[in-house]
Image 1 (cartoon, rainbow over the protein chains, first blue to last red):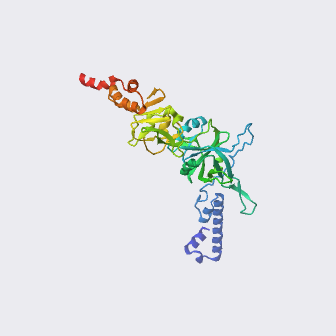
Image 2: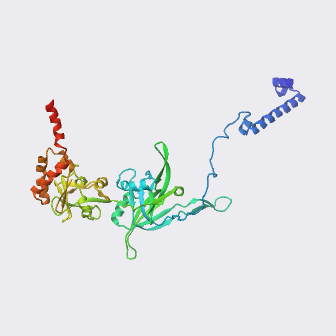
Image 3: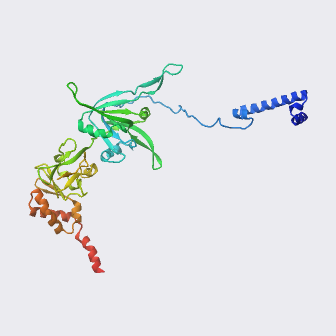
Length: 349
Length: 73
């Protein structure tokens, strides 16, 4: 056999005799079969066709589909909470996250409402009706079998707010924005979604609203139907996933939004009223003696020397006379006035 | 700092008090203006402003301390 190989290698198969050629071919086939069997046993098909190299390409990459971790505990609690009709919404910026701890969340909610930072909240209460669409099972007929569920149809809810054109004008600042939305139901429970975020090198559970885009609409009254103000919330494609990590708890009280206020001239020089910037509603007497010099600035950025609240006339008196404005919600809150926010408008007092 | 006189609640800017040179200067500069704007008696308001100054202004020793140190040197 060695000789045959030697001879045939020298001149190739052309120079071999027929008998030797047959023997050489048989031997070659035997070698090929042994190599194929080895490649098959190692699972390396590429190696089989490439003639030898092992562990190439086919073992790279994984598509993880592990259903073994799923465990549905389908028992019913004694008092299962069921989300009720929405009584209010709290709008936040897309990146805003909050504590999942109910006490911490409730302690900080007022600060978030008056804040101008990334965690700012815009509460919208007095929702009197919800008209939802979508959110139901979405199926597909494509393929050889019958319909199969492929997710849910996009969820959108039209919330009707019991308010007027002043709120409409304020809400238009949020019109068509992608935001996050917490729902507050009629039982006073707040609903959002929980996520895991890195915090100080470790994982922390955070609470945030549902990803959504909002649209503000108003329909003026006519002979049959009254005025209507709507906030349309279009939940994102993430909605079903966000519902899987639903998080909610009871609020002690429903948060209220803040009202933009400015100064209006009073009955005489140096006298003024604090009124809402939109409707002119007078807030001076509501907060009375709580008004302080630190809550106002003149057009040079200076506080007045003194501000006097007169309980008889319900007016404020400023010294010296100048152009003044009401400071922002943070400054008012420091003085014990919550719910108002000065607009950037000076009034000659 | 608030002063209550009758139905009027007067809030005096704290920074104004802390920034004034002396009690007398503070009272003299502000009592007449504030009293006139609010229809109050200047004498009554001057007394109240003096009380407020005593509560809020830094102690006299602190203000005099740098001068005393200079004299000692």
